[in-house]
Image (cartoon, rainbow, N blue to C red; front, side, top):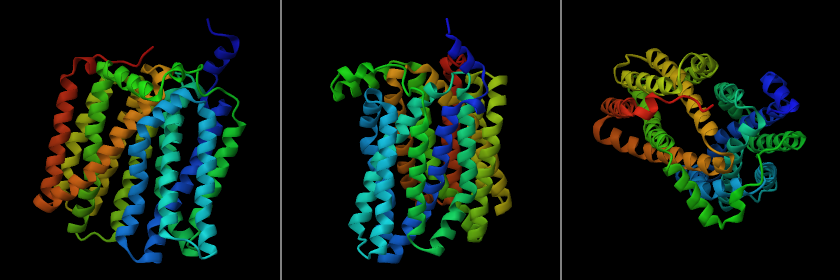
Length: 411
């Protein structure tokens, strides 16, 4: 039987959940700061060295760090105190990023300094992201979880629409200002986490009694023996492969239509607006349809829309396709994340989240490389059709999976 406190928590609206608001608020400020650095980092390196290669290396180091540290991050998050991990990670990132403007102003900034900062920040960011995903079901109730995921993704999508513009503006005022803004944003996140009173995990994690390699193997073994979660994770990774390739395909198709840089930016802005609408609609869809129906129908809609890029006559139509495609994507991803988090025991959530991140981010990186090879050998239009065919295969496989068809959110 629920205690009186638990009953109150489960019936109060999400906007009155103090810990959730603190967690979301801190992360949104931090995400705004990340957007500034995302724009400013390659610009700063180009200004220092004039080398696009060195800029590319610096940008890729964060992804490489995530791929290397990801599996271990899940083990640590399932064995250590998650709140302490998140506090230390954001405090560490604040100090690392603050070192960039300080070194710049004192004229001692080097590429080695930047490489080290990006790599260590990527490691801490991976740990934080896994801990944050594993903690959310303990910050909100299961009933609130889908709405919490939808609200956070909607806010992130909204920030995407203006974050890049703000980053460019800050950089124009001073090369180090975006980094200073990002460091301060992590300070805000640390402050908000310190104010939270709730527990970030249900109990002392069982994995703490195991060596890390056994704990890691236990996490992979558990996921492998969950047929539905295993299948959904593989499909999610395969979809991310297309996503990584699709970004470059859309960009080249827009250029072939003689779209200006501003027009290309408008296409991706339309996609961000579509994502915001999709996030807002996700709760209604979740209440109206079963999880299995959502997973199958959203994959089919995505599969049928992507090939339309190949026949789009202008950037306006491409923007409409991008908005429609991104409207569908968050509905599916929120339902999928909700299912994963509610179906996974708290003692396994860190390792499950790190495995998903490893597959999706790794597949996106590989997809970007494959996308370039496809475009170079077959052209952007044929590549769009091939990627659409890939999505159709995923939709067919998902439709034929009996477990997916019968799936509903765990009680």
